Length: 182
Image (tube, rainbow, N blue to C red; front, side, top):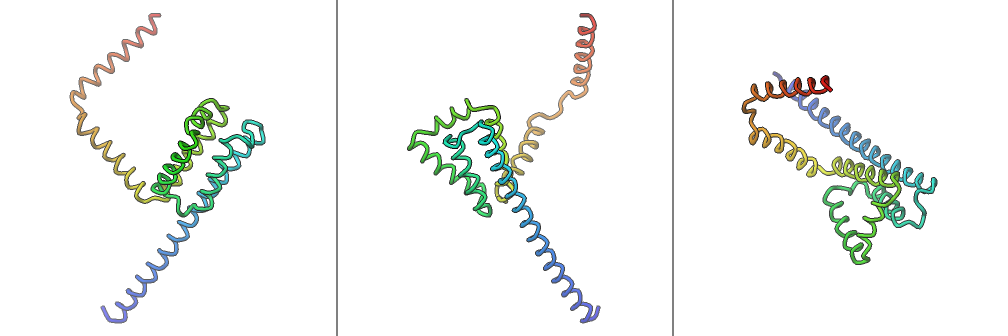
């Protein structure tokens, strides 16, 4: 291989790395925009609950979730698992000082089913965003899921698999017979 060919390979490698970094940057930027639109959808769903009368503008649930969604939208880059835990702990302390944590939980439990669905969807969406923004959380979740599956295989090896299948087949036919006999 000549020096010219080696030089061209180095240039091609550098260009490939540069293009790959640019594509990765644009991909992450697109993901961030996608997360931002999820938060906009959550805010629209909250405003829909307000418009349909399922929540009032003075309701603490409305003000709490509206403020959280707006702050999360503004600080989406910084929304990681660690920052969310820190913010949650600060919010919990503030709510405990105001003795509203229990009232908030009771209010959510007794709220309209649409409001409870919104709270559940909100929690799910925030978890998705945190997982996407936090490499540490993705790693912990991946290790946890993989470790759990591995431990189940180690703790419960398939002993007596053949006999287990025979028993399950017998129970199936026994249940089928009982259903037909009735």
